[in-house]
Image 1 (cartoon, rainbow, N blue to C red):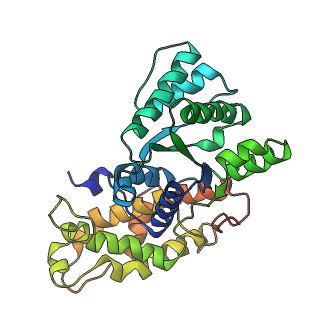
Image 2 (tube, rainbow, N blue to C red):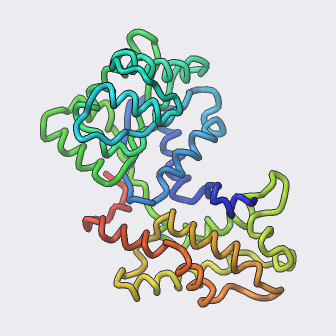
Image 3 (cartoon, rainbow, N blue to C red):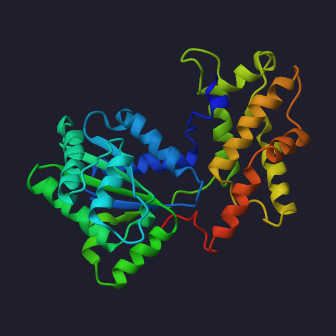
Length: 321
């Protein structure tokens, strides 16, 4: 099956590329940690997967990279915390001794850094908004051991919901400035698809970058081969896509023009590719009715409604100072 039909592909959108460039910049410098909060379904997890799979394009063999996810706990328990982090890394452990689980976690980071030129590891932690001061103290101890015992440098990239910024403010208020300095030295908000340029970039990627198989047709070409040969490109229809989706948001009391969640938007694009592009004949273009049909056939509106409920008002697309 095609990756679009399996929904197993990542579009390097403008927002994703901005995030990737920033993490690469942090990795080349002396930043020990930074946070990248962003709206739910903005594409953060896609970005993490993309970075882990492709980091050598930007960083060569200078660093190692691992990713993990914070396990949900009502209160931080050392053993559950380390076992949850290991499980997310694909290395589950049945060891109940917290120290053993911690050493296994440290070992994974040392292994990742061992073959790098700078003996450095970038640790990307998803759902970092679930961290608390206790968990950060645990990670701080790992950071110290990596450098003191194993001579490994570490960059911690904390990725999560907008509450990450609140955690930073809380730690400062509680006088835990050492944790802020170590893990939250820089901050960048992962933004949504909030400009026509962003949507154009997604469409151009499907028109001109992504292929399946490796040397096969471009994604848009695969689903509309004859129109594509005669000059059709998905990017020609981004205006009708954006205008239709904005109107649908307005009709449902969501205002419109506030940006689209990456997850929901890609659902719409996938449906357009699979169900609407094959209908096109030479000279045809997507219509408002086609876009609306695809939008209503997916969970796109549910994603946007969920985001509206979770939003606390501030413009989370602005870059943090």
